Image 1 (tube, rainbow, N blue to C red):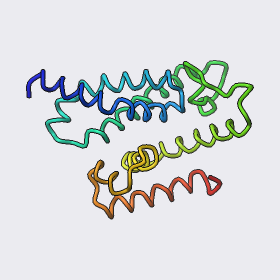
Image 2: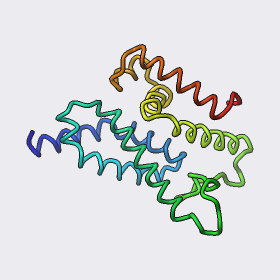
Image 3: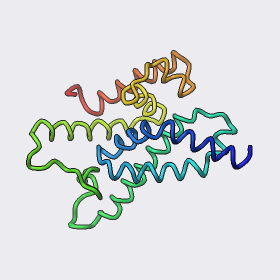
Length: 182
């Protein structure tokens, strides 16, 4: 595959999925759009470096892109937590993701319901991050990208019964982590 074809294919991929992948980045950045843009740009740089290998192996590119964005966002959050550790003696576990660079914390005008929703959203995505990678990708494809279970399993290259089992186990595990309150 020539460099020109590789570049053209990557540009087409970015143009086709940029909006969808931006939504993925926003999710992993707890709604912080400025941070999501940085994370997405970093993820695109990582994808570009690995692009020829992924194309030649015929892997599920969209699922791979989701994983790259997720990992880039987690790396960013991890680095911020490391920088914040020790500052003002705030334990790392108490530093919310949306209180980072480009902060979008609830303002005085936000309602109590919005604050509760944000807290529940953070708790949910933190719990999802505790699942294995395939379960995370499956839940994201079903609940964020709004694909059917069948379509999501095809993107991930799973058998129908395997996808159903992963989905059921993931939801059960989330209920154990979060509780039945949500």
